[in-house]
Image (cartoon, rainbow, N blue to C red):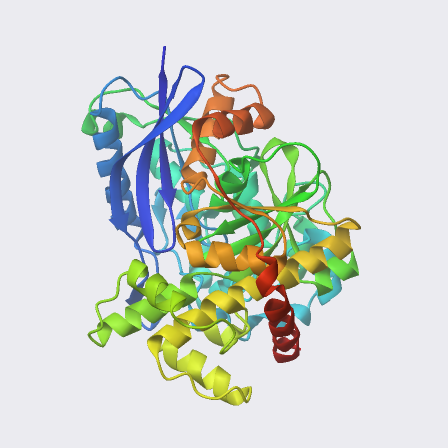
Length: 492
């Protein structure tokens, strides 16, 4: 007997609805709907068009429920930090959710630190400091539009979309943990911190764990989408929480993961948060995971760098596919140019290739003239950044990382995968690509009692999806070691 669930997986550049069929001890996937996603600009700010997104979700659900046997549940995962303010009396959103790349938070962290010390915030929340975090977004939102906070409930992005499905207004733990407003140890809103920075306590919803029921499709949607009374679940609503849940690792704690896509999220699973000054200084964050785990990780500007280069190049008439960019990168020798992928100048530049060229010139490396040189620069720099973060992770944990699991869309970039293994000097285990959707489906199975635990879910992933292994080529280790010293000098 098979059981089918639908996973709504929304990324920062695209969304899809994936149907998972649990049958004969394995999981198979089929895509029912895929669509583009991205910011819209209104009155000089960047927003998400939440209602357009919801229309795409409805289309995906309708297609999923028409694919064969009944669907036994649905759940939504998205990126972190973004939110919507729901007016309780009307059931409407105050405005479209702001996009995390909107520039309104540029100077906000310093204002917050005047109210609460930098160290105290980390000691409470364990979250890496990034200007896009919810804490800064809410602060500046309240300054600009205090009326939005009257009679309001703050719902993180997947919770806001789940509300549109089922009317559920609870906040899911893994997504809430990205806000920098959740206490890392109690796993509840840190109301003392919230009060210190001047946000109203009443806007924060009740927190529930992943793998929980969130009701059923509301009556109007049930009628609109085919009449099936569809259960709705809260999963690892933060997409990285779902992706990490699907990492096909087992055994000792000597492995790390990389969820590789628009962002690169590199880390390990811990039983308890690590809130030391050393962890803070190394820019590691303590986010929620499935099975009571802490995702101890660092956020790295990932393939966003390539995505933006491609966008600009294609606007100028190049017509590159991602495969074209990967192919031309392979023809360029390693280490010609390097950047710090996490430099804030790459967060939302008007022209990414031009910004990379300027960085190389300003760091006395010369001027990359060819598109292929810029693309190779990004690949090499990401590989070196991963090595840098893995070394710091080993120091913080007090043991060596021996295996590196990579999941997500970035798995398709074979040059990045091979370069990462060569650069880091450890095996890189690649796959599954659709880890986020798989983790979403696993969590629904756990919530419904079809899967016993996170460990059982990972065993299912290992049975269901092949992986590819890259092993370091010792012939290029000297070159990578030299480049690593150059990289460290550039980012220091």
